[in-house]
Image (tube, rainbow, N blue to C red; front, side):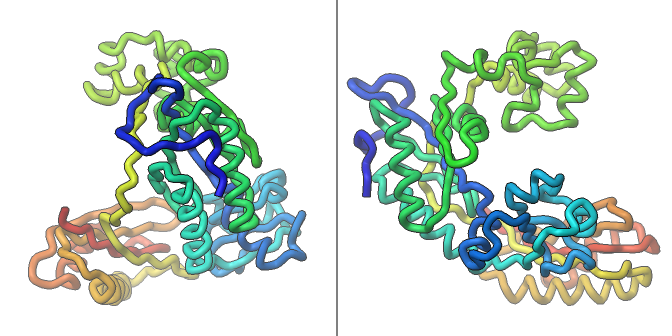
Length: 350
């Protein structure tokens, strides 16, 4: 196991710590799910691969991930499989295999922990590390080599003074590269880019910023927090200004992730028009979820996606029966409209 220039465990701080500096690293596996599938099916290397649903683009479902070759043809995560097939009729479609991805992810995260650094897992394919080193690029390259040796997968690493900077830097390092963004280089790299170049700012916020004359990260950093508070709220407005200035949390929390909820949902190949059938399906899903949870439940939440693509959720306190609570939540929905997806989720007590 390589150690870069030596990660030394101690209380997290930022900035200079004697002879070395505390850095935050963001490790992100490149096209993780597609890359795992290519390892399982080497004959697919170099081909446009799409993973989603049960692998049948004629059925309803969405793209979980697409290989770089498929992305070049306009396919991206979250896209309906049917749309992906229209854009890329020559794509290879594969079903999601969560058990395999979980197993490979566990190897990756264990490899990162072997560095001796605190590791905060974000999902299957990404994590933050806190590292004390005088050469973060060398440390990052050693991490990449260790992950490659353990899994044959490539990853990219972003380096920053905080999580925000590191997360954004990873995008500049892809694929299979290293990039550093710090408070000193923040505006050099991002200053003239639109605000949605920042992790946490999406299209909806971007559209609300434009009428205010805020069209770049530099504009956002210079904005009046009170003005944005009036537009976005007393918490969100000033927070956006801090994002524009590259400020963010630098503490990496290695505490194991504990799910706050558990649920099941089904996308139906034909729309359900009979509300009695909807209730039957909700009851079935509720029984399934109830049998799978082993922690105290505070609320039961039902999700309904009406055709063509309008999603509504309602939740109620658990009460005496999980199934009864799910049906009580369903009673809050507008009946009669065609339904394409149903879901039931248990939200755990803290």
